[in-house]
Length: 205
Image 1 (cartoon, rainbow, N blue to C red):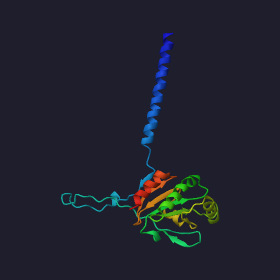
Image 2: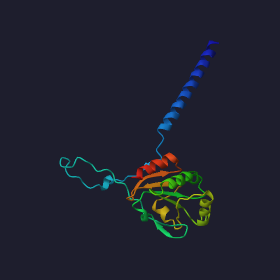
Image 3: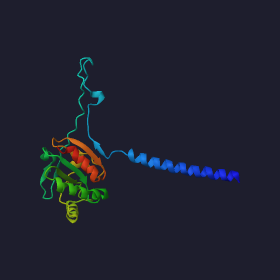
Image 4: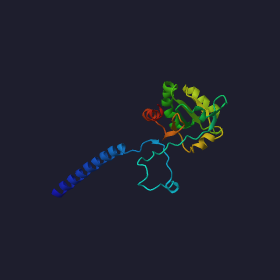
């Protein structure tokens, strides 16, 4: 009888221990989750770095890694006019790659539309549709935008030049580009209002 009681106590203690471990893991997992918004930065690779003079004569301040320039590309608006990303240098840009068949893309679009309506005077929003001509067409994508009532500018990447320039292999993906044309940050996957706002804060003056 005593051994059964001890076994029951051990089992109860084990269950409590496992429950506590689960709660702790969940809490730490949430706190240590990777940041969705990744800051872009480039520096000279070590193997190609310019040799430095003697350390005693070197300046004490080391330069900060520079932000990479956002690759330029051409795409087309709904009227078929050619548009270049470089046309918008001088104003921050939110660049998003999407398709109408992409569920995660659809989920984030209301936030983009809301921020576009609030900040269109300060930030250029470019929603680049991956228009392959089969799974996604200009007509289909335009119809989707009209049905949803979105008013942000849409570009159609009918040649694949934009996707190639940014090595887009999954969507949605969003780039935050400052007024000088630097790619300041990138967010992969669907983003919510808070992440979109953080990205905007990085590029707004």
